Length: 372
Image (cartoon, rainbow, N blue to C red; front, side, top):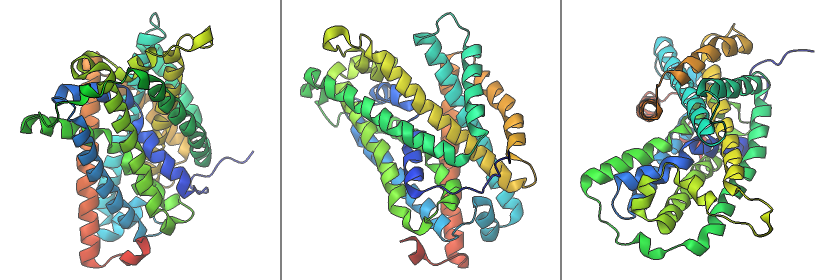
Protein backbone atom coordinates (compact mmCIF):
# COMPACT_ATOMS: atom_id res chain seq x y z
CA UNK A 1 0.00 0.00 0.00
CA UNK A 2 1.29 3.43 -0.88
CA UNK A 3 2.06 5.49 2.20
CA UNK A 4 0.26 8.76 2.79
CA UNK A 5 2.15 11.73 1.41
CA UNK A 6 2.06 14.62 3.85
CA UNK A 7 0.38 17.67 2.40
CA UNK A 8 -1.50 15.89 -0.40
CA UNK A 9 -4.89 16.30 1.27
CA UNK A 10 -7.03 19.36 1.69
CA UNK A 11 -9.44 20.22 4.49
CA UNK A 12 -12.71 22.08 4.26
CA UNK A 13 -13.47 25.41 5.90
CA UNK A 14 -16.11 23.68 8.04
CA UNK A 15 -13.56 21.18 9.31
CA UNK A 16 -11.16 23.95 10.33
CA UNK A 17 -14.04 25.90 11.85
CA UNK A 18 -14.79 22.98 14.20
CA UNK A 19 -11.11 22.36 14.93
CA UNK A 20 -10.78 25.79 16.56
CA UNK A 21 -13.25 25.16 19.43
CA UNK A 22 -11.96 21.60 19.79
CA UNK A 23 -8.45 22.84 20.56
CA UNK A 24 -9.64 25.71 22.75
CA UNK A 25 -12.11 23.76 24.89
CA UNK A 26 -9.79 20.80 25.49
CA UNK A 27 -8.93 20.42 29.16
CA UNK A 28 -10.05 23.87 30.31
CA UNK A 29 -13.79 23.23 30.17
CA UNK A 30 -13.50 21.37 33.50
CA UNK A 31 -11.60 23.91 35.56
CA UNK A 32 -12.38 27.33 34.04
CA UNK A 33 -15.34 28.13 36.36
CA UNK A 34 -13.16 27.45 39.41
CA UNK A 35 -10.28 29.60 38.10
CA UNK A 36 -12.54 32.57 37.38
CA UNK A 37 -14.37 32.18 40.68
CA UNK A 38 -11.01 32.40 42.47
CA UNK A 39 -9.88 35.44 40.48
CA UNK A 40 -13.15 37.41 40.47
CA UNK A 41 -15.65 38.60 43.06
CA UNK A 42 -19.35 37.97 42.57
CA UNK A 43 -20.25 36.81 39.06
CA UNK A 44 -17.94 39.22 37.26
CA UNK A 45 -16.18 36.42 35.39
CA UNK A 46 -18.59 36.79 32.45
CA UNK A 47 -17.11 40.23 31.79
CA UNK A 48 -13.56 38.99 31.32
CA UNK A 49 -14.78 36.02 29.29
CA UNK A 50 -16.39 38.43 26.83
CA UNK A 51 -13.43 40.83 26.80
CA UNK A 52 -10.93 37.99 26.42
CA UNK A 53 -13.10 36.50 23.70
CA UNK A 54 -13.21 39.83 21.86
CA UNK A 55 -9.41 40.05 21.98
CA UNK A 56 -9.14 36.51 20.66
CA UNK A 57 -11.65 37.23 17.88
CA UNK A 58 -9.55 40.20 16.80
CA UNK A 59 -6.40 38.07 16.71
CA UNK A 60 -8.16 35.34 14.71
CA UNK A 61 -9.30 38.03 12.27
CA UNK A 62 -5.71 39.30 11.94
CA UNK A 63 -4.42 35.74 11.44
CA UNK A 64 -7.00 35.09 8.75
CA UNK A 65 -6.25 38.36 6.96
CA UNK A 66 -2.53 37.61 7.10
CA UNK A 67 -2.86 34.07 5.77
CA UNK A 68 -5.26 35.12 3.01
CA UNK A 69 -2.73 37.62 1.68
CA UNK A 70 -0.74 34.53 0.69
CA UNK A 71 -3.29 31.96 -0.57
CA UNK A 72 -2.21 28.31 -0.44
CA UNK A 73 1.11 29.24 1.19
CA UNK A 74 2.32 27.78 4.48
CA UNK A 75 3.17 29.98 7.45
CA UNK A 76 6.86 29.34 6.87
CA UNK A 77 6.54 30.31 3.21
CA UNK A 78 4.82 33.66 3.69
CA UNK A 79 6.85 34.50 6.81
CA UNK A 80 9.93 34.08 4.60
CA UNK A 81 8.42 36.51 2.07
CA UNK A 82 7.58 39.06 4.75
CA UNK A 83 10.80 39.01 6.78
CA UNK A 84 13.59 36.57 5.91
CA UNK A 85 14.14 32.83 5.76
CA UNK A 86 16.24 32.76 8.92
CA UNK A 87 13.64 34.65 10.92
CA UNK A 88 10.87 32.47 9.46
CA UNK A 89 12.74 29.34 10.55
CA UNK A 90 13.00 30.65 14.11
CA UNK A 91 9.33 31.68 14.25
CA UNK A 92 8.08 28.40 12.80
CA UNK A 93 10.31 26.32 15.07
CA UNK A 94 9.10 28.21 18.16
CA UNK A 95 5.49 27.58 17.16
CA UNK A 96 6.34 23.88 16.87
CA UNK A 97 7.89 23.88 20.35
CA UNK A 98 4.82 25.57 21.84
CA UNK A 99 2.40 23.12 20.25
CA UNK A 100 4.56 20.21 21.46
CA UNK A 101 4.27 21.66 24.95
CA UNK A 102 0.52 22.07 24.56
CA UNK A 103 0.12 18.43 23.48
CA UNK A 104 2.22 17.31 26.47
CA UNK A 105 0.09 19.38 28.84
CA UNK A 106 -3.14 17.89 27.47
CA UNK A 107 -1.77 14.36 27.86
CA UNK A 108 -0.68 14.96 31.46
CA UNK A 109 -3.98 16.55 32.49
CA UNK A 110 -5.91 13.67 30.96
CA UNK A 111 -3.63 11.16 32.68
CA UNK A 112 -4.02 12.84 36.06
CA UNK A 113 -7.79 13.27 35.79
CA UNK A 114 -8.30 9.72 34.51
CA UNK A 115 -6.29 8.35 37.41
CA UNK A 116 -8.34 10.36 39.87
CA UNK A 117 -11.77 9.40 38.52
CA UNK A 118 -11.31 6.06 36.75
CA UNK A 119 -7.94 4.35 37.29
CA UNK A 120 -7.04 5.18 40.87
CA UNK A 121 -4.71 2.17 41.17
CA UNK A 122 -2.93 2.79 37.87
CA UNK A 123 0.19 5.01 37.81
CA UNK A 124 -0.27 8.28 35.93
CA UNK A 125 2.76 7.32 33.82
CA UNK A 126 0.92 4.28 32.47
CA UNK A 127 -2.31 6.18 31.80
CA UNK A 128 -0.44 8.98 30.01
CA UNK A 129 1.62 6.53 27.95
CA UNK A 130 -1.50 4.63 26.90
CA UNK A 131 -3.15 7.84 25.78
CA UNK A 132 -0.01 8.89 23.92
CA UNK A 133 0.00 5.58 22.01
CA UNK A 134 -3.54 6.27 20.80
CA UNK A 135 -2.58 9.82 19.80
CA UNK A 136 0.49 8.59 17.91
CA UNK A 137 -1.59 6.02 16.07
CA UNK A 138 -4.07 8.71 15.05
CA UNK A 139 -1.57 11.29 13.80
CA UNK A 140 0.46 8.69 11.89
CA UNK A 141 -2.29 8.47 9.31
CA UNK A 142 -4.10 10.95 7.12
CA UNK A 143 -4.63 14.51 8.26
CA UNK A 144 -7.99 14.58 6.51
CA UNK A 145 -8.99 11.62 8.68
CA UNK A 146 -8.09 13.60 11.81
CA UNK A 147 -10.43 16.38 10.81
CA UNK A 148 -13.20 13.96 9.90
CA UNK A 149 -12.77 12.33 13.31
CA UNK A 150 -13.01 15.72 14.97
CA UNK A 151 -16.17 16.51 13.00
CA UNK A 152 -17.64 13.28 14.35
CA UNK A 153 -16.59 13.96 17.96
CA UNK A 154 -17.52 17.63 18.21
CA UNK A 155 -21.32 17.34 17.85
CA UNK A 156 -21.31 14.58 20.48
CA UNK A 157 -19.29 16.73 22.88
CA UNK A 158 -21.54 19.75 22.41
CA UNK A 159 -24.72 17.68 22.73
CA UNK A 160 -23.66 16.08 26.02
CA UNK A 161 -22.42 19.39 27.43
CA UNK A 162 -25.66 21.19 26.58
CA UNK A 163 -27.65 18.24 27.98
CA UNK A 164 -25.80 18.52 31.30
CA UNK A 165 -26.52 22.25 31.46
CA UNK A 166 -30.16 21.86 30.44
CA UNK A 167 -30.93 19.20 33.05
CA UNK A 168 -29.34 21.40 35.73
CA UNK A 169 -31.72 24.29 35.00
CA UNK A 170 -34.02 23.24 37.86
CA UNK A 171 -31.26 23.99 40.39
CA UNK A 172 -30.45 27.43 39.01
CA UNK A 173 -30.51 30.31 41.49
CA UNK A 174 -30.35 33.64 39.67
CA UNK A 175 -29.60 35.40 42.94
CA UNK A 176 -26.13 33.81 42.84
CA UNK A 177 -25.27 36.18 39.98
CA UNK A 178 -25.63 39.17 42.27
CA UNK A 179 -24.08 41.49 43.24
CA UNK A 180 -22.25 42.38 40.03
CA UNK A 181 -19.23 44.59 39.34
CA UNK A 182 -17.60 43.89 42.71
CA UNK A 183 -14.13 42.96 41.48
CA UNK A 184 -11.24 45.41 41.83
CA UNK A 185 -8.73 46.25 39.10
CA UNK A 186 -6.25 43.60 40.26
CA UNK A 187 -8.95 40.94 40.20
CA UNK A 188 -10.05 41.97 36.72
CA UNK A 189 -6.44 41.72 35.57
CA UNK A 190 -6.11 38.18 36.89
CA UNK A 191 -9.46 37.15 35.46
CA UNK A 192 -8.68 38.67 32.07
CA UNK A 193 -5.38 36.80 31.98
CA UNK A 194 -7.19 33.54 32.72
CA UNK A 195 -9.81 34.13 30.03
CA UNK A 196 -7.27 35.15 27.38
CA UNK A 197 -5.13 32.07 28.05
CA UNK A 198 -7.98 29.56 27.71
CA UNK A 199 -8.68 30.89 24.21
CA UNK A 200 -5.07 30.41 23.08
CA UNK A 201 -5.52 27.46 20.70
CA UNK A 202 -6.63 29.65 17.79
CA UNK A 203 -3.04 29.78 16.48
CA UNK A 204 -3.78 26.64 14.46
CA UNK A 205 -5.35 28.99 11.88
CA UNK A 206 -1.86 30.11 10.84
CA UNK A 207 -0.88 26.60 9.78
CA UNK A 208 -4.11 25.00 8.60
CA UNK A 209 -5.62 27.80 6.53
CA UNK A 210 -3.15 27.03 3.73
CA UNK A 211 -4.75 23.59 3.44
CA UNK A 212 -8.35 24.80 3.19
CA UNK A 213 -9.87 24.05 -0.20
CA UNK A 214 -11.62 27.46 -0.49
CA UNK A 215 -9.53 29.82 1.66
CA UNK A 216 -11.10 33.07 0.41
CA UNK A 217 -14.48 31.96 1.79
CA UNK A 218 -13.08 30.82 5.13
CA UNK A 219 -12.93 34.15 6.99
CA UNK A 220 -16.48 34.00 8.42
CA UNK A 221 -16.03 30.35 9.32
CA UNK A 222 -12.91 31.14 11.36
CA UNK A 223 -14.75 33.84 13.28
CA UNK A 224 -17.72 31.55 13.95
CA UNK A 225 -15.32 28.84 15.09
CA UNK A 226 -13.91 31.30 17.63
CA UNK A 227 -17.35 32.45 18.82
CA UNK A 228 -18.37 28.88 19.69
CA UNK A 229 -15.99 28.36 22.66
CA UNK A 230 -16.75 31.88 23.91
CA UNK A 231 -20.46 31.04 24.17
CA UNK A 232 -19.82 27.60 25.69
CA UNK A 233 -17.40 28.95 28.30
CA UNK A 234 -19.94 31.63 29.25
CA UNK A 235 -22.69 29.04 29.67
CA UNK A 236 -20.57 26.66 31.76
CA UNK A 237 -19.28 29.48 33.97
CA UNK A 238 -22.70 31.05 34.56
CA UNK A 239 -24.38 27.71 35.27
CA UNK A 240 -21.65 26.81 37.77
CA UNK A 241 -22.17 30.08 39.62
CA UNK A 242 -25.97 29.98 39.48
CA UNK A 243 -26.04 26.43 40.89
CA UNK A 244 -23.10 26.28 43.31
CA UNK A 245 -22.48 29.96 44.06
CA UNK A 246 -19.12 31.69 43.72
CA UNK A 247 -17.64 30.47 47.02
CA UNK A 248 -18.48 26.81 46.42
CA UNK A 249 -17.34 27.00 42.79
CA UNK A 250 -13.97 28.39 43.85
CA UNK A 251 -13.42 25.32 46.08
CA UNK A 252 -14.53 22.63 43.62
CA UNK A 253 -11.71 20.93 41.73
CA UNK A 254 -13.72 20.47 38.51
CA UNK A 255 -17.08 22.29 38.72
CA UNK A 256 -18.21 21.02 35.31
CA UNK A 257 -17.94 17.39 36.44
CA UNK A 258 -19.87 18.30 39.59
CA UNK A 259 -22.65 19.64 37.37
CA UNK A 260 -22.83 16.22 35.72
CA UNK A 261 -22.86 14.49 39.13
CA UNK A 262 -26.10 16.27 40.07
CA UNK A 263 -28.04 14.65 37.24
CA UNK A 264 -30.34 11.74 38.11
CA UNK A 265 -32.12 9.96 35.27
CA UNK A 266 -35.33 8.14 36.36
CA UNK A 267 -35.42 4.38 35.95
CA UNK A 268 -31.69 3.87 36.49
CA UNK A 269 -30.98 4.02 32.77
CA UNK A 270 -27.71 5.78 33.48
CA UNK A 271 -26.75 5.89 37.15
CA UNK A 272 -23.54 7.90 36.75
CA UNK A 273 -23.94 10.66 34.19
CA UNK A 274 -20.55 12.06 35.15
CA UNK A 275 -18.97 8.88 33.77
CA UNK A 276 -20.59 9.57 30.39
CA UNK A 277 -19.52 13.20 30.61
CA UNK A 278 -15.96 12.17 31.44
CA UNK A 279 -15.84 9.85 28.42
CA UNK A 280 -17.04 12.67 26.18
CA UNK A 281 -14.52 15.06 27.73
CA UNK A 282 -11.79 12.50 26.99
CA UNK A 283 -12.88 12.59 23.35
CA UNK A 284 -12.48 16.37 23.42
CA UNK A 285 -9.01 16.21 24.93
CA UNK A 286 -8.04 13.57 22.38
CA UNK A 287 -9.16 15.84 19.53
CA UNK A 288 -7.27 18.79 21.01
CA UNK A 289 -4.11 16.73 21.50
CA UNK A 290 -3.96 15.25 18.01
CA UNK A 291 -4.47 18.68 16.46
CA UNK A 292 -1.76 20.29 18.60
CA UNK A 293 0.64 17.42 17.84
CA UNK A 294 -0.18 17.58 14.13
CA UNK A 295 0.41 21.34 13.96
CA UNK A 296 3.86 20.81 15.51
CA UNK A 297 4.64 18.21 12.85
CA UNK A 298 3.29 20.44 10.09
CA UNK A 299 5.44 23.34 11.27
CA UNK A 300 8.61 21.24 11.44
CA UNK A 301 7.82 19.60 8.11
CA UNK A 302 7.72 23.01 6.44
CA UNK A 303 11.30 23.60 7.64
CA UNK A 304 12.71 20.09 7.15
CA UNK A 305 10.98 19.20 3.91
CA UNK A 306 12.92 16.00 3.23
CA UNK A 307 11.89 14.28 6.44
CA UNK A 308 8.84 12.04 6.37
CA UNK A 309 5.93 12.49 8.71
CA UNK A 310 6.56 9.20 10.51
CA UNK A 311 10.08 10.34 11.38
CA UNK A 312 8.71 13.42 13.13
CA UNK A 313 6.22 11.25 15.00
CA UNK A 314 8.94 8.88 16.22
CA UNK A 315 11.24 11.74 17.26
CA UNK A 316 8.62 13.90 18.96
CA UNK A 317 6.69 11.20 20.83
CA UNK A 318 9.36 10.56 23.51
CA UNK A 319 9.81 14.32 23.91
CA UNK A 320 6.09 14.84 24.42
CA UNK A 321 5.97 11.99 26.95
CA UNK A 322 8.93 13.36 28.90
CA UNK A 323 7.42 16.85 29.00
CA UNK A 324 4.06 15.42 30.07
CA UNK A 325 5.63 13.69 33.08
CA UNK A 326 8.06 16.46 33.99
CA UNK A 327 5.67 18.20 36.46
CA UNK A 328 5.69 16.31 39.76
CA UNK A 329 2.18 17.11 41.01
CA UNK A 330 -1.02 18.86 39.96
CA UNK A 331 0.19 22.29 41.07
CA UNK A 332 3.26 21.94 38.85
CA UNK A 333 1.04 20.65 36.04
CA UNK A 334 -1.10 23.78 36.29
CA UNK A 335 2.03 25.94 36.37
CA UNK A 336 3.39 24.16 33.30
CA UNK A 337 0.11 24.72 31.48
CA UNK A 338 0.06 28.41 32.40
CA UNK A 339 3.62 28.86 31.13
CA UNK A 340 2.88 27.12 27.82
CA UNK A 341 -0.36 28.98 27.20
CA UNK A 342 1.07 32.34 28.26
CA UNK A 343 3.97 31.86 25.88
CA UNK A 344 1.60 30.71 23.12
CA UNK A 345 -0.71 33.71 23.42
CA UNK A 346 2.08 36.28 23.79
CA UNK A 347 4.25 34.84 21.02
CA UNK A 348 1.43 34.29 18.52
CA UNK A 349 -0.08 37.72 19.17
CA UNK A 350 3.18 39.62 18.76
CA UNK A 351 4.26 37.54 15.77
CA UNK A 352 0.99 37.82 13.87
CA UNK A 353 0.49 41.54 14.43
CA UNK A 354 4.12 42.26 13.52
CA UNK A 355 4.01 40.15 10.35
CA UNK A 356 0.69 41.67 9.30
CA UNK A 357 1.94 45.25 9.75
CA UNK A 358 5.23 44.53 7.98
CA UNK A 359 3.37 42.89 5.09
CA UNK A 360 1.11 45.95 4.82
CA UNK A 361 4.00 48.41 4.96
CA UNK A 362 6.12 46.47 2.49
CA UNK A 363 3.05 45.69 0.35
CA UNK A 364 3.93 42.01 0.34
CA UNK A 365 1.28 39.48 -0.63
CA UNK A 366 -2.20 39.92 -2.10
CA UNK A 367 -4.51 42.84 -1.42
CA UNK A 368 -6.83 42.99 1.57
CA UNK A 369 -9.92 42.53 -0.54
CA UNK A 370 -8.99 38.90 -0.95
CA UNK A 371 -9.70 38.27 2.67
CA UNK A 372 -13.13 39.84 2.77
